[in-house]
Length: 161
Image (cartoon, rainbow, N blue to C red; front, side, top):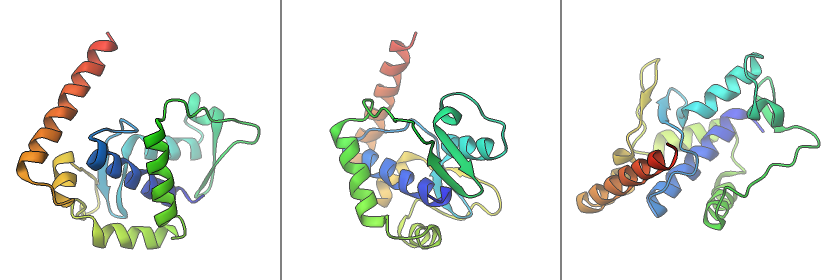
């Protein structure tokens, strides 16, 4: 699959999860770039893999050839970290957008995602608040969702100590 298409589909899934479940699937940073929103660290893994600079989990399982990424032959991806709801969201996004090519997805994200704006040749972070407002959520719900995300991140940080 073209990696720009993959990045758009992953962003849309992450966005859907944040709006519906107040939960990040990836834990990645969300950024706006010229060609639309994407997951920053995932993009870095793809770029580093294509340049031969990456190693570890990603490179052992995913190959990058030009603008395409694919699971390496013989590799079985363990999805036990994904909940059934996460898998459902991934499938829903793919069902809705999978037939589009990468440039159709770029156009769609530019026209339909209020949190995206052209960062003028660089990148900029997309605050979750902007995603929530872009989805039409009220101030009270946005505030609650932001607080819930913060508390969850603090809890996960404590568990990792």
